[in-house]
Amino acid sequence: MQPEHFLDLGRQLSKRDDAAACRTAISRAYYAAYHVAAKMLKDCIGVSIPSAASGHAIVQDYLTRCGDLKVAEVAKRVGDLYTDRISADYRLDTKRVETARNARLRVDSAEVVVRALQKCSRDESRLNAMREVLRDARSTRGRVR
Image (cartoon, rainbow, N blue to C red; front, side, top):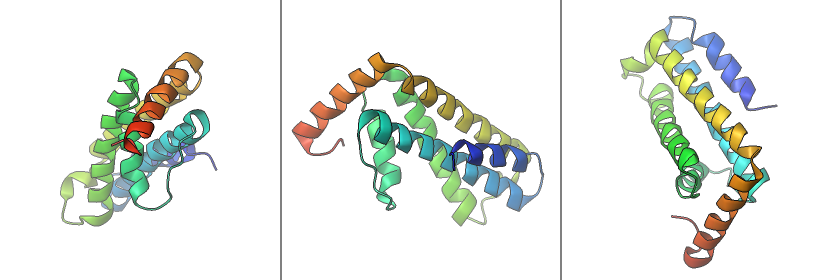
């Protein structure tokens, strides 16, 4: 399965104006962005991302500290999407995640993340620079943090 399929599903669900569809669209949007980011870090940079819950913070951490300003901006979006995903999945009293407008905004944000990371994945000079920064960070601190 390709992570972008989550984005497609999120887009479809964001057209509905019921709470469950909107919450699920936000969740799927986050997971599209997360899995594209984790795949890029693994396949293009050589970073292993644990499948445990800690993987979510580690992905954001690596994106933030990779030395590429556009990717660092993407990391902020991933963090915001994560926050909204938590609200959508676990905070049933949070009503802002139950509107089609908000769901569409989150899907649009995830699409920006996916497109930016796909573009970065095709740019070997950017990837080389990111590898260097992250290698240096890991060697001096054990893990980027």
